[in-house]
Structure formats: structure tokens, C-alpha cells
Image (tube, rainbow, N blue to C red; front, side, top):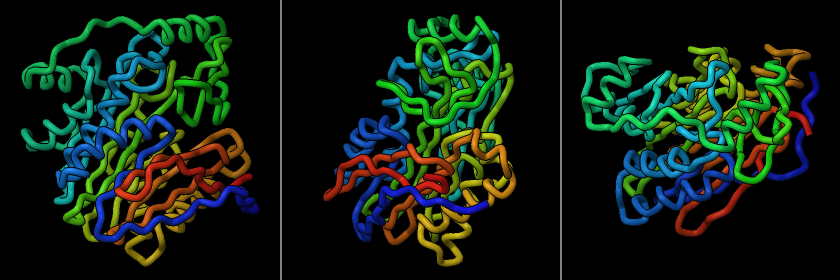
Amino acid sequence: MTSKMAKTEDPVFSVKGKAIVISTWDAGLEANKAAWKILGAGGRALDAVEQGVMVTEASQNCCVGLGANPDRDGFVTLDACIMDEYFNCGSVAFLERIKHPISVARRVMEKTPHVMLAGSGAQQFAVAEGFPLEEQKLSPDAQKAYDSWLKKSEYKPIINIENKGNHGPFAPVQLETGELNHDTIGMVAMDINGNLSGSCTTSGLGFKMRGRLGDSPIIGAGLFVDNEVGACTATGQGEDVIRVAGSHTVVELMRQGLTPEAACKKTIERIVKIKKDTVKDIQVAFIALNKKGQVGSFAIHKGFNYAIKSNDIEKLVNGKSWFS
């Protein structure tokens, strides 16, 4: 299969010795601002990546957090993971009625001997840690999208369907409302001390089978951080990120000397090779940050973008892609 490069250039930013944060999609612009309040004040990258994605979790849209699209049974389930500069990591999966799964994931990391808690156990732990149980009620937009989906209840991949307030890369069915039904926000950051951390949070695939998990709560798939090398996070169809241990693969390729962009591209190439002709129906994208402060991204299809913020830069960047 021949690679066709997108025409939009994806510059490699280098901010060695300075704090920097990058995150997926245009939702990352607001998330980065929250992260920068910590990074700009000399704070730790771990605190920044938690606070940053909490902005997106709190937004009442169809994509992330309790306002997101439900599973096919009508329930919103959330996944998240977080990782710091010491290989400490925490994750929650299939979590219901908790507003900020990323913060619960951090508590798992800091207060338990485990990496991942799931389902009712994750919820029980969250409540014990003082997180309130929220009402199980779909947001108006999510209810409208779910009602539309119920008319056909089919799964038909349509990539990069975006409209105002929705930022995701993949939709199993095009809804009459025009809404997206899948999204993730992933964020990686470096603080002024040169330490890396990352976070990833999602409501997963809209109208998914109950119990379905994607890559977002899986360390090494949706997120990976190695403080000697770099950090990476993923967005898109989680099943195909999991197949190649996507974020870990990107970091390992950076360890071998590839730039962030080249490492992301090489990992996308593996997915393209595996998926063969069906690759036209899916989107996967990676963003990465190395220890030198260089950033890069790569996606299967055009339309992916990511947000970047440092002392000198605040912008949305169009990523390169395998197919134009």
C-alpha cells in the first residue's frame, strides 16, 4: 500500500529546556490553558496533565465525560489513565457516574498497589476517596444523538466527521443530528525540570457494546511515558491502537533515535499494513513529545490536529497523514 502524504506540513517544534504541553484535537486548546497554569508557574507535569484534561471531562458535550454519548444500552461509561516520570501509572475503566475519571486514575496510582480498577470496583474506590456519585442522566445533545442512533442501531465507520463542539476522529454511524459519537483527549507535557507525564480520558466509542474498552485506559496503548526518552498518547479506533501497543511502540522508536513525527509515522505504517484494505474505514493518530522538547504527530487519514502550548507557542497544528 502506497503512502500518500498530506499537503499540510507538520512542523517540529523544539523547546528544549522549557515547559511544553500538547494534546489531541481542538478541545486541547482549552485543556492546554488549564495545564499551562501549572506548567507556567513551574509546577509538575503530572499535575498539569491531570488538570488539563479535567476541563474536557467537565464540558457537557457528546464526546468526553458524563455528558458524552452512551453505550448501546444507554449508559455512559468512562475510561482514563495517567502516568508520571517515575513509571507510576493508574487507570480506571468502565467507570460510571463519576465526573473526573482522570483524578480517580491518579488516586489508583498513588493510593493502591494496582494499576487498573474497573467497573463497580472502580466506582466503589472513587466513592471511598470522596468522589461524589453524579446523576445518571444523558446530556440533551447525547440524548438526541442516542435517540437518532436507536432508529437503525448499526455500526458503520465514518472517519473524521466533525462539527462545532465535537472533536473526535471516528464515528461508528453518521447520526441524523450530525453529531460525533467517539472521542478521546490525550495530553503529554514536560515541565521546567525536564520531567514528562501524560494523561488520557474518554467516554469511548459511542453506542458501543456494553463493557467494551478501547485503548484509552491501557498503559502502553493509549498512553506511555518514559522519562529518559519521551511520551506519547493516541486517539482514534482503540482496537487498532491496542493491536500494536501503539503509544509504547512510538516511545520505543524514539528510543532508537527517531524523531517524534517519524516514530508516530512508523507506528501508523504498522497499523496500515495490518488493516490492509479496511484501513480506509478507520482513523488512528498519535502525538508524541521527546526528551529534547521536540513534538510531532501522524495519523492514518487527514483531518487530525493537535494543540500545542509553551512560552512561545499557542496554536492548533494540522498533522501529517498516511493518506491525503
